[in-house]
Image (tube, rainbow, N blue to C red):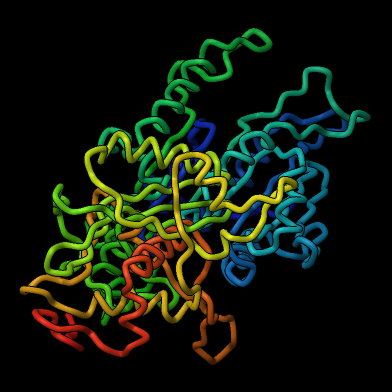
Length: 498
């Protein structure tokens, strides 16, 4: 490349990230630890490792992906141009942004894609790539990683200049991120030694794939070397530790100012680089308090259970119970990805048979939108569920305010000194994360103004949170909201839990 850049690695973990030969390699760390620059340099480093072709140039094509277009343009592309100026080669700012660098040494194409522009994303997922970089990977579904694994390593130079022995060198997916929560796919794969049985199948599938690739010989060598890994996850040190990375490139007192006025959970994630919950956007349930509402408990076998279901392409269910005193407890969740009503009914039925076979079921309440006909057979999700052993009924309202308040009303009450709504942290990890802030109203990108969308963001946490809303509506909690009364006895109205 005719433009020379001088890059000094900020620390040993970044070195490992840059020189890793794993097929998918991720770097997690605090703010300001040099992750974004490391990601850009990793693309340049990989491009320089490709074989020179008959015209002497090294050919490559990369996708750099971020969750939103504003973040892509203000952070990722800005960092890229710090190392590779717009004046070098041909820069196209729109549809999707692309940097094409052609000189005597290189023919390199870099395409920048955001997840909130589906047309651009579909275009890239149909391309043949040398490699890919995902920025802030905690914001993407694992399905994106799965899709990219079939695209990288497939790029070829034009046949007019391609050598007969051409081979893509180190096809990789690289990822950088701040720390996600402990129910995230990153945590499941990175901390496989401590993963729960709930995630055991995912970890087993990765290990099985590694074994198979080591035994598969192509062109005289295995797809994975004896020490090469399919997935590798690296964690940078705590920014407060003596081993913190990138400190020489930060102004004095950077982390002290960064932490000022922040919550302990925020500092845990963005300064110490640990897994944790951090609210991004405006939470749907600001009433939620982790220390009050997340409780270890078991359901009473003498009382029936209740179930709430949210339909759509990612159906979810919450299984809980109302105690003798009126406490609502969410004990188990069943979450899915890209699953139809029939398959989900079978999964839910199997879960109920295995987990709580001796409990009576008082009510199964679902999203009223499930009464709409789907497919060519003109049947509804409720009919499909019933045909497969789950007899649910639609909630009496789908008003978002009533749904929200049905849960929030219980959250702000105490019954005999306990929170009147509780979630089991191990049985309902996705629901717990959603209530802690992942179920949220996304910020509207308006300069100088802090505004939010009126409807909650649809993400992996929204479906299970709405399933819990339907569960409580099925038990009459929505009627309490509409009456404007709390009830009698031990329930204290308008008691704020802090």
